[in-house]
Length: 446
Image (cartoon, rainbow, N blue to C red; front, side, top):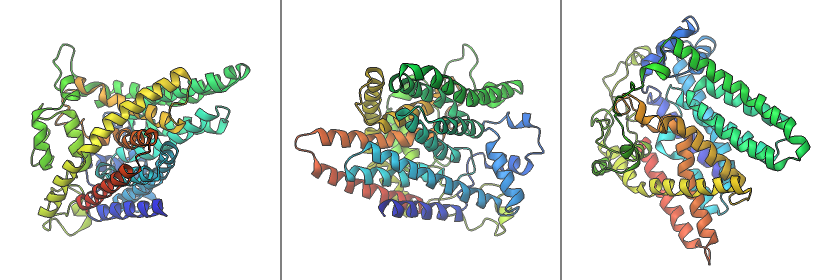
């Protein structure tokens, strides 16, 4: 009942966002043009962009066969439904990772209502595919991690990863992560006589998404596409975002506590803020004001409204909610770092030592999240415009960042249960603290 209520609240907030044209986000005009033109455009034009053709195929299908007038709202509704379904898988993984009911409920509520997840569950962009596909890959990988003899799960992992490659290039980071987890499973949970057979099955299963990704990269390279040519620094050029900008806080990060806006306050200024600071403010506020009330002077006709994105202003109440949210949730960003390090080290030790130091579900989501995060994180120093190009926005690593935040709850649960006596009072207080955060999130988005 609690999870059903959470899903209903998340759905209601998403529907309100759709009503306010929250699906009109970054790069909207490019996506709109390609949806309207697909599949008449040459495929080579698609691979000039940063997004594979999956978004345009789905959008074109809905436009041509569901509604040629309100197709954007229908796409946003489909995205919302996909993401709510993906959350149910995340709930299941959290229940397997967390023992105390306080942390289970808190983590589920937090993951459901955290602003960056809600906002990018409906924006017309490839990011809306990320969570549901990630959740499916995690589900079937977990099944194989426990029983590598399931042929159906091998097929499902292969198909889900292949679909991911067609929807968002970042899924390439999950290939080595899945391969590592399943190689360990095959090597440790099967008898010697079975390992070769199921190892071959695993290689064939991962060969399909690998080949899809390589073909996409080859096509992008052939047309000098963005992901292979246009965004990268040339040899010898100094990085715009340096490793100390990525790893260490800056004094300027204090300015983020007032919840600045992406466009009006230009928080994309080069090296003014750290990468962790930018991730924090854009995770806990509606940084681009996509869910805020549209201005009254925009055209009343729907078709005219979507021809050009419009800027929105926050109300004084919304600004207050957003400032409180970014400050109140500093503890969750700190917990995300600590929890990711805690679960990352124990997951690595579990795999290396073949000992269950953490639940299998925790090991799987930790390794997969690190894999998904890696392609963006390790290329930040190599892109020409990481700041104004917004390569630091959480939408690019959405499922990974969501997992990292929930790992903070996993670590707290583990530490409080291992304490003598168990820290039940602390868990109750923290659950109340998280309830306040979730109410702030609804205020930020409502």
